[in-house]
Structures are given as structure tokens and as C-alpha cells.
Length: 141
Image (cartoon, rainbow, N blue to C red; front, side, top):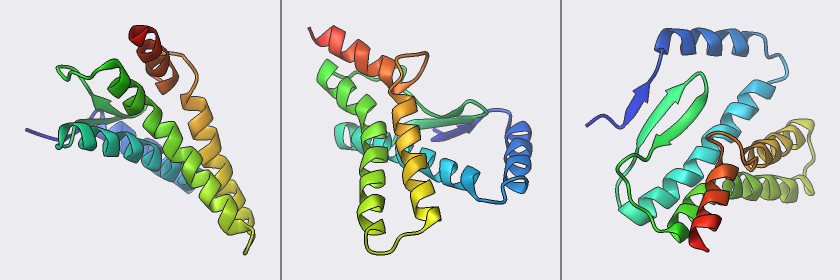
């Protein structure tokens, strides 16, 4: 079974090349790294619960796990949804602590990118983590 599905790979790669070419400050690279760290949080919690890796889908809309056919308790759903933003907040805090010893604009941009990715994903809209967290909380009541 394939563990990685890429939807519209030519369009995705063309979009990434165009974005990265027009990114002199490296902000897109920092946002992409923050997104990868975000999904890494979800992957780590999924692996802790299931002891296997989920199927990942990469598309122009982002990176996501396919959870159809998977069963989780409401508490597990809550931790699975919250793991991504928590990973971003933890990385942002760690970078800010490190920057107290050696400050740099790139470091502050990276901390801010992680903070923004984590906060954006807490919005209770669409397929974002905030909606999944809200559903898990309401389901657990």
C-alpha cells in the first residue's frame, strides 16, 4: 500500500518552483518547513496510537493524513488534531529561547512562521485542526 499520494504532481511542482524562485528572503521556505513540522506532530501522535504510519496526501491545498477507516476515541482525536499546532508552538518557543543567546532576523521569521501556522490551523474551518478539535470536544461531552 502506498503511504504517500501526490495529487496533480506537475501542477504542485510547478507552483513550488515558481514560489521558491520568487522568494528572496526565504519566507516561503520557512513556511514550508513550519508546515512539515506541523504535520510531523500529527504523524508522531498517529504513530504512538497505531504503531504504523498513515497515508499522506500532498496537494496544492497542503499536506494531510487520510483517516478514513481509522477509529479513534474522542480523546485520541483531540490529541491527534492538537498535535500539529502544539508542535508549531513548541518549535516557536524553542527558537525564541535560542534567540535570547544569538538573535537573528531569520530566527525571528522562523519562530513567527511557526506561530502563524499553528494559530491558522486552530481556526474552526473546513479541514483545519481547529474544527477537528472542536468536534472532538463536542463528541467527548
